[in-house]
Image (tube, rainbow over all chains, first blue to last red; front, side, top):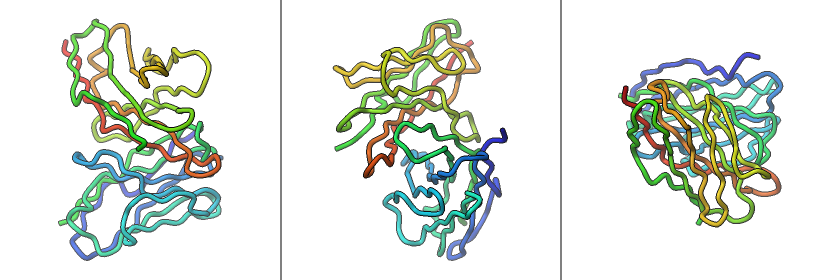
Length: 114
Length: 116
């Protein structure tokens, strides 16, 4: 099976712009989670989608939003970019959103905000 | 408060020696524990998880972890380290976010350096 894919792998934006990141989960997986990874804060949970519905949400401002399509592919959008949004954004997929289910991660999208 | 601690930012070990990466947790209810590894400029790779049963869990690449309920720990171990094991290791615990839905809590990571 193909793994989780994320596009693009690298992005450079300027403050105030918006950006959309894409994630394609492993075939058959219905749950997609998004994380922000920075050296200082580690991995921070953004949100999780399952069957096109947001199941859980982390403590991020409303500038961060997401959605999931009927084929389980997911997009994450960040509006009005700030310098502090520079990070590695990771997507993870799993069969379900159950507590014991393993998440499988994509390679990430490296976002740099100038 | 629910939390995961990886008390060592960095662990150094000589190739061929055993390695241990420590993880302790605080969570209500039964803990479900995970270890992941991250190589530079890569996503996280799943190593192993503890759900229930045998306290010693075997995973990928020769890694294993021991669940200790009384010490609320889930330390990652490998009998003989390889230079290629050098990476960033993350421990995570799954708590309930309502119903059976998960909310993963992550440690800040431990950088493992294996010296030749």
